[in-house]
Length: 80
Image 1 (cartoon, rainbow, N blue to C red):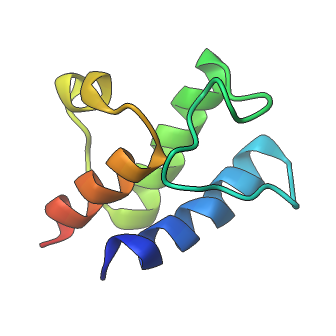
Image 2: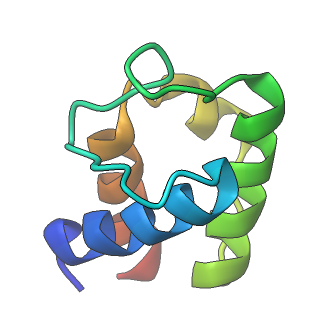
């Protein structure tokens, strides 16, 4: 699965968790550019992503993520 396919799936997860059915994510989207992406939403997003892909993120990995594109790349690495 390439990172653009993962980004598309992440968009569905973000829409569901943030309750924003029209949300459009780009690889550069981050907590400062997505409405309602606060610390609680972040935990819920990470949990939903881990559940969807059956992966676990280490705390250090999450701290290094700058945007949704970084998350998609990390997921792709973990799925390889």
